[in-house]
Length: 175
Image 1 (cartoon, rainbow, N blue to C red):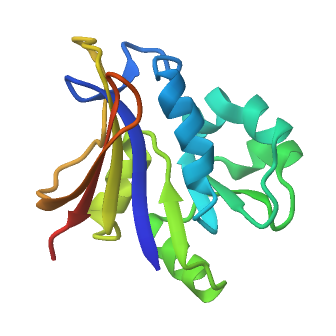
Image 2: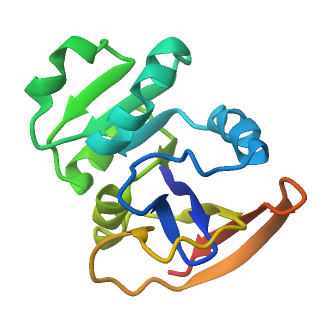
């Protein structure tokens, strides 16, 4: 299974502005590219803060055949939002979740953050690629791409201009 962390971040490396969860800082170019890029994935994983920030958009525009898995310490708290084979909530550790998804036939998994979830997948050595939209903003404070202690080397594989000032950087993890 190919695992790709997808995130938008500021020039100084933050995926959320200050203490505000979500990607309200992203450009129109990223907002157009992001849903289109998700079509190439069988499933998406995110944390509960990401879910809460994007819940209305996700529920309003369900993608057929694309599972959304929300990692949370308390799956029961989200029971009303669960939809069999479409939206699920789990407290499984990242390695167990990845193994289960592999067994379910998932071939392409998008990890959509936030910092804690990205860190869990990195710490477990599960990440194959990073797709980072680099927005021309500097926050000075915010949420980092990933939380934890790891040392991951990458190779730049692609650079795409999404808009006049917005770049998409694709990296492959060196093994």
